[in-house]
Image (cartoon, rainbow, N blue to C red; front, side, top):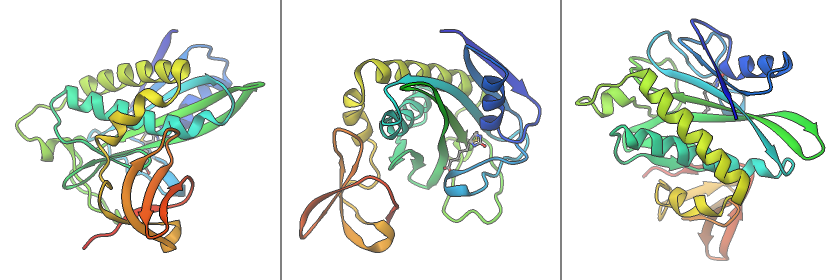
Length: 243
Ligand code: BTN
């Protein structure tokens, strides 16, 4: 499969650009990188701060057979791929916060937004994987959680956005192919080895469910242990309780 790479000085959102390329009839795997975004999108309708020149803003358009059910697992697969790519460049201790936030001990390093474009034909779904990594992020306004960047966490290494992009594009491309062929099973152990919730007290479902993080099951649900047993959480919120 052929990748077609677009590098832009400025864009509203690289996810939106990939959608436009599909709508314009692109039959390859559209990949878009921008130097800054004017309307960067985060999960749960939040904005993603996208200052010029500092960070990586990357989106890839992926096509899967098997209907919308592929999406839950895919989100975790992407987290594993991005974490492995960053580690191959020297970033140690990359953690994952379910389902797919990229974490370091100091805070959030990056995020992944999976958007569903639609069904091309019966069972063939188009998905946009949007990946934002803080590379040289110097300041952020009103971000609601601790954050960090590759340059501040690993100051001894040189961080080139081109090299990071290349590593992530390759890793995501390979992981998506494995996921399409054999499903989620190969990704469970690699995901679990990076789980920042493991053994920690967490709440889910808006605080209704409290327990200890137990990793994920074979389909990517998060497992919470409490007095009643082990409860799988699919949708809804899990947040780590601090202190
Ligand atoms: C999150 O909320 O954690 C997900 C953030 C995803 C941000 C990336 S930056 C590239 C791509 N384009 C967007 O508009 N969002 C994603």
